[in-house]
Amino acid sequence: MSVVATPVHVGQPRAVERVVRGQPTSDGAGVRLTRVLTQPLQRRLDPFLMLDAFGSDAAGDYIGGFPDHPHRGFETVTIMLAGRMRHRDSVGNVGLLEPGSVQWMTAGRGIVHSEMPEQQEGRMAGFQLWVNLAAKDKMTAPQYRDIAPADVPEIELDGGARMRVIAGETHGVRGAVQRPTTEPLVLDIALPAGVRLDVPLPSSHNAFAFVYDGSLDVGGDIATRVECERMAILANGAGADGARLAAAAGPARVLLVAGRPLREPIAQYGPFVMNTTEELQAAFADYQRGVLAT
Image 1 (tube, rainbow, N blue to C red):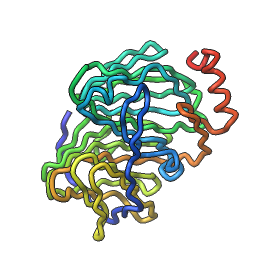
Image 2: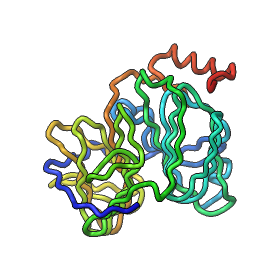
Image 3: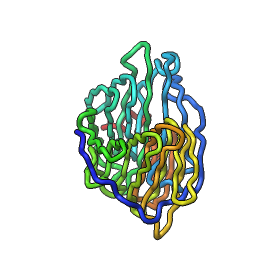
Image 4: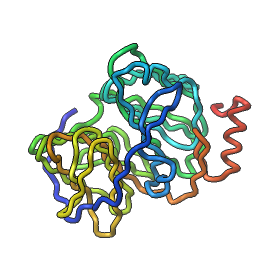
């Protein structure tokens, strides 16, 4: 679904507080990826816990996939750019992630799932974002939603800028997902060379921009150049009303993410994210006893 929208103006764009380079790592059964939002940044970018970027033309980098593994206490958002990935979980859900599709999974009190490649060759690329749940919601029933490419609203703006509105609302267009409490805004943005885009953001929200193709100038009169595969943490300020992005030397792609912070304790042990050490111990014990997802 494509919508033509009128550009908006941000009066006081957020500055770039810090530019972060992701850390190469592997997860699952040897899948190579870049961990962009790491554990030390969780408090600063609350309610977001993790952002992984993956992308390779070599099957050996992704073919092992992510066999059965548990989660409790947060939500996972998988955004596919290229390739095909099959999801199966302990609740009985089965889904296929294809280019342009999104999976929004609420682990809640517990889910065991797998994400396995459904291809033997070719490119596999995308992101996985972890969004924390408030203490009151951590033990909610697990939920799962597959969102087809056609069901992600896309905004077209003057100059050729395009935004896929995965979550939240911008420019008068509601995204595919609306989540209470954390109110995440997740935008996949494409900018032609020389095009500038203003995106309103609530001053109360933490926000970051991950450039995954080309380079961007981010900020107001004194902008910061953010190169490819870098994350810009956007500064908070009482008067700031949004982000200003401008494609630098050529076309650029960026994932812009913002959300309302929970300001609650974060206790993480691998795939479990709770508020206290005792809750983590309970999650681990439940998993060992086979009752995490019951």
